[in-house]
Image (cartoon, rainbow, N blue to C red; front, side, top):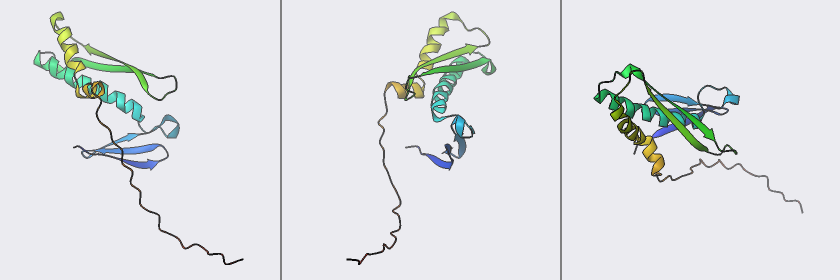
Length: 142
């Protein structure tokens, strides 16, 4: 199992530590030091798609620098979840038309997308350090 640690920094800003790499997530009204967790989620899907597309294109002789993958997303009206994601794969140089469908199949099977299609089991555990007990005044009035 891989571990990711998230540390609170200030207000709505958190530092994410992944294999020694630090990322910051924040909210626009709270300093805006990084993307929101939701934007990072979509970025994860788009960048995973880009990784799979690049590997495919490299196998077929298309130069690495000629690939751009971008994504747009739509919020649910109540902003509790994302309802749609549109990903665009653009190559600076054309690729043979008979490879288009294969490229799309490869991109659609990126690890992040597969994890959304076949939902992973998520479990939650809560741990808290007990507060030190403070002596209470005992009332003897009566």
